[in-house]
Image (cartoon, rainbow, N blue to C red):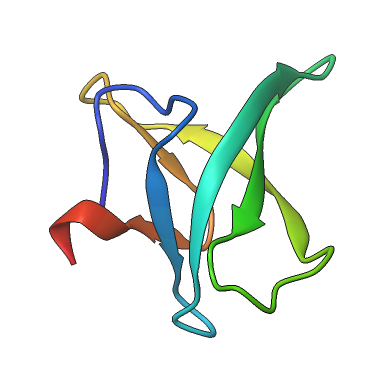
Length: 72
């Protein structure tokens, strides 16, 4: 599922585990953009993940392996 732009504070759900993450920061590498994600459940500890931001032809963005949680 896509959104117009990935931004900090959005919640995304992992397609593999169903766990919900919040976007904490965004950064650009040489050839790609990435989002840093933090699990929202209480026992997460240091359960941070990095996800690649994929640009869609229609002008939107999504995170590889995730769906936006507000619409789930």
